[in-house]
Image (cartoon, rainbow, N blue to C red; front, side, top):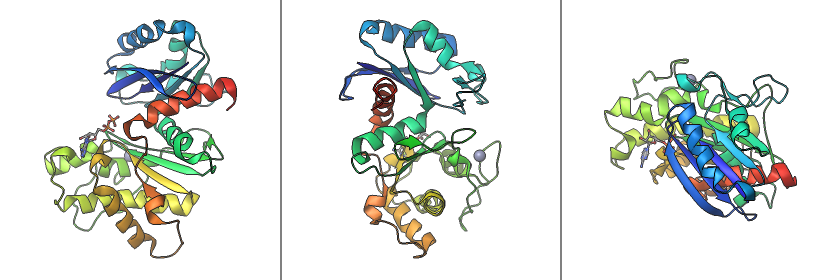
Length: 289
Ligand code: ADP
Ligand code: ZN
């Protein structure tokens, strides 16, 4: 068996899965302070301790993924004060002594989708989550793309929609994708949450315009085989088609991308992408598969 921890800014999801990455047991609890939250993690895994080979963690961030760094395994400069510079991997290891795979929440979700749907053909995958924040991860030849750190695609600059006067709400940047298009930006602009905005509201064209810009930039920079958009905001099922349309407008036939319905997609695993990805990363760590 393998363990999975999806460490989100609002909730943690812990799970146990088997060799086939089938989820056997899953438990979710709110993210409070590190001590209390890690105690619940420990309690969950202690029940299964003897059966678990390794644990995969996909964490909110930014996080330190540089194995040569002194703060490898830490959550770093997060605005969530209690978690800033928290030694996640160190704390977990003290509680449950197993090999730990460590990556970002969005990388884990990307990996879940890759393993589930794209590994056979070894396709190169980019995954965005549009939720409380916006994150992005990329997989090439089965490995995450990273250099000095993991990507932060959610903070790319976007061009304002001509009918949108919102300036964005990212504390670091004007007009970044997260500040313009994440759930809280939708809520601030419209005075209500995304789930309360009707399908026919013209705002969704504006939202799609920003998301499409990330697909445009991604296409020109990485030419992946597939771009996946997940996260709470994408529960608006009509949105993906609007994103495809805006994307085709922006790209203006400059590059010929794969069939648009196969190129810009939502996650086939839905809300389980992250958990399956964490299980797969745990398995990869100890079996090299
Ligand atoms: P998190 O990013 O915290 O892990 P989610 O991916 O579920 O969690 O994203 C939460 C955000 O998604 C919230 O801002 C919420 O308003 C928004 N959201 C959730 N469901 C919907 C929906 N059906 N339509 C539009 N927005 C939604
Ligand atoms: Zn930003």
